[in-house]
Length: 431
Image (cartoon, rainbow, N blue to C red):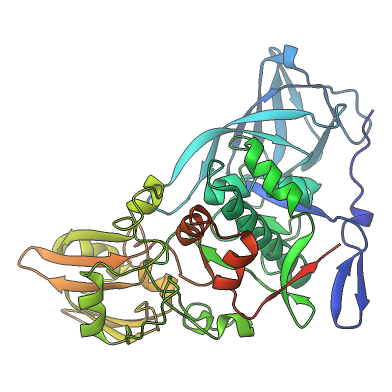
C-alpha cells in the first residue's frame, strides 16, 4: 500500500557556493480549487484517509458528493451521509498512480475564458474548509508529475517537441523559483493552478509528447549567477516582448528581463512607446514568429490573439470602469506611460465628474470586464462608445509561446528557443 507523502521532506535545500540545489526532487503543494462549497468526485481506484480511518472510497461508490455544513465537511456516499468532525481531510491512493475525477472544476475565474470542466488528478489530496466556507483543495505530488499537468495546458500537448521542451524548462523554472521565494504560497499551498501562477489541470490534457518533453528535460531550469529565475511566458506577445519593470515593478528585475525585443531574428528598431508609432505598427503586418498571417500553421488560440478588437458602448464601459462609484459617463482614456512593447502601464480614465489614474499593466486590463487580452492597445472614441485595437495575449514578459512553436517548426532546438527569449539566462540542474 502506498504511504502518504511526508511534508517533512518536501523542501530540502542545500546552499552550494551561489547555487540553490534541491537534494531530491521536491514535492509541491498545489491548490486546485478554492471557490466552491460542493464537490462531486468519481474515484478510479481505492482511496483511503491518511489518519487510518476506515472510510474508504472506490469506483463502486459511483459519484461521491462533498459539501460544507456548519464549517465542517459532510460526505454523501452510496446513499449515506457522513459527517466529519475535523475541518480538514486527506486522501491517498492504494495505487501509486491512482486517480480520481472532480466534476465541474472552475478555471479562468474572472477572465473572458472563465468556465468549468471535469478533470482527473493524481497525488495526495488535502481538503480544507476556508473561513468563507469554501473548499480549498490542495494536491501534493512530485514536481515532475506536476509539470506533466502544466505543460500541455500552457502550450498544447500537440505542439512541436522542442517547443514543449522549452515550455517544460520555463515552467519548471517558474515552479522552482516560486518554491524558493514563496511568491504564490499560502498556509496550505506553494503554487496555485490558474493564470496567477501556472495552469495546472491534472491529467486531462497530458499526451505522450508532452510527458516526453518533461522527462527529457528533467531538473533543468533557467538561472542567473547560479540561482533560479522566474521564467515568465505568455500566450502571444503580439510581436514584441516587454520589460519586467513595466509589468511587475515590485518583482526582481534580473538581467534576462532588462531587454525587450521584437519576436524575430531581425534587429528592427521602432519606438512602440510612442502612440503614433504603435498605432501604425498595430495595423501593419510585422515580421514576427507569432504572426499568424506569416505563419499560418500557428494554433487557433494564437491566431485569434495576435491582433484583436473590442468595442464597448459608452453606457457599458462607463459602468465597468467606474467600479461602483458615481462618476458619470466615461469621457476619455489617456495612456500616460507605455513600455517598449507599447503596453500601457499608467493610464487615466476621465469621467464627467472625476478622473481615475490606474497604474499597472494588469490593472489597466482589468478596468474592462472581462479583462483585455493585453495592455498593448490604442483606443478610439466613437459616437457609440470606445473601440480598443490591441496586440497579443498576456503580459509579454519572457517567452512567447506562439513564437516558440514557430521556432520549433523552423528547426530550432529548445536551447535555441530559450536563448532567444531569455537572452542572459543559463541552464542549471535544480536537483
